[in-house]
Length: 161
Image (cartoon, rainbow, N blue to C red; front, side, top):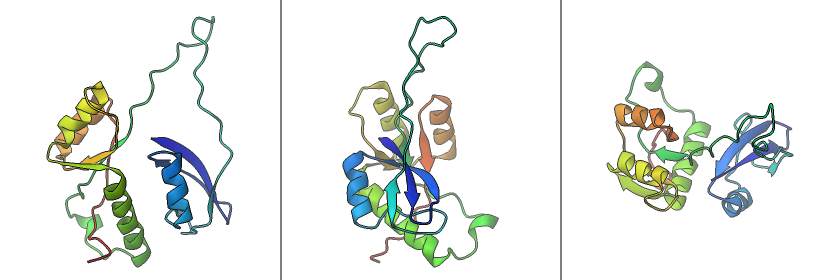
């Protein structure tokens, strides 16, 4: 996974994660990268500072931090509640449908084995890749406590029916 600093034509700056640089290029060319502020799809990479660890052993400098865990995504919508009872605005629904399409295209579906597979990826037992599936609130919390990056995504119906 790679994180890019991005800027839309209206100068809004934001960050987003992609499977790799080629995935960003494909999504941007298809108009699938949108500014979260205004919805503009004319998005370019912004100038960003590379993340370089400090030199170990130099007095006053900390040891380099362990590499951050690769984020993985769960495809579980939060349970309906007061905040989720209204209709989703059309622009938000469209963005969530495109997000779902990209997750399904670029990640492996692991179903109810999500938590176990995320642990196997984190420990290096299996290949490092994006996954999605189902996890209970308790399983997701346990993964976070173990230092494994997870995100819950609202899983809306596909745009193609």
